[in-house]
Length: 410
Image (cartoon, rainbow, N blue to C red; front, side, top):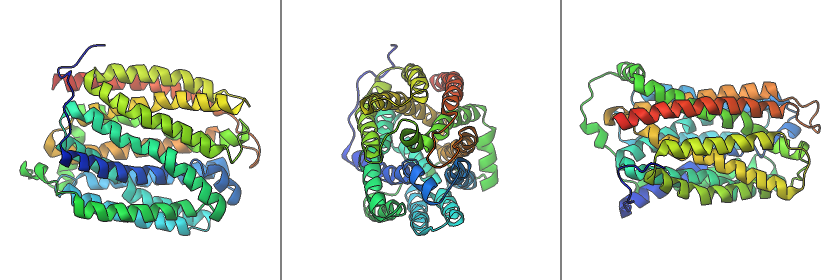
């Protein structure tokens, strides 16, 4: 592989370590809030008597509202202290999640997911803007790796615990657990995170709409938007049906389901820091393309699985997760290098919103492709999702290659 210009890895300062920990904890709760819908999917569809289409809309409601929120906030995302923005949207996310824990019907659940998405969907873009402000590109791959460990940690700790308490007290209880944890993290951010205002030193006289329009008009930014939106489609299209496919098609029991998610999460926790280091040491596109090919192979295998021994399901889950997660770190690091400092907040907000909207469309389309005759029958056409994801992934490789060329030109 071709080495980049900085082969030696620089250490993080203590203040940077604090920032990484706080952002990772924030990501953990936001990711868990979204991810928990997948393992609770089978339980939700059976308790509320939901079809795959209605459940797909429940998942996509969060994504659509998050996307709209990102576009609305993009214009003024670079005009305020990023710490204040993070605190504001995080408290809104907490109240939206509390509403989810109180939902007792499909309409109230749908409304709760919309409210949570309006606030939670912006938090990721604010975190990425903070990372781009505080960390140079040669450190950014490792930072992205640590932040994405929130995904793995949500599967190792969050999802198994959520499933356990959901079996005891109902599907609403995991959301209440997230509320308590997020409230504690919000207080820590309030007192420990320093104000982040460096971007305000760059004079910006454009009004909110002009700033938003200026960011969208940049050709290199639009290439970045298209690339990252494509990457989110595969996960959103496949993820909501994970628990239903495992239980109804692969004959996994409710007791084995937490183990399945936990093993996948442990593999993510191990892989993400390694990929982060490789992304900082070697060419990021090469890492991304290799991970994409790996993912394509195992997505095709996994979506065609029939009832097999549990250990084989575990192995396939781990191998597929390695490919999926290994794509995220180098692609996010490359995208974060595109915007200028005065445009980072707007770029990250638009980028996040388009990812969410694309994911929402994918979840809704996935709900139309996948069919279940009744709540206990196997899912049909899950293999079709695999073929669609492969095609999207191949286009994604070409798009990230273009992003990589733009970054090297800069």
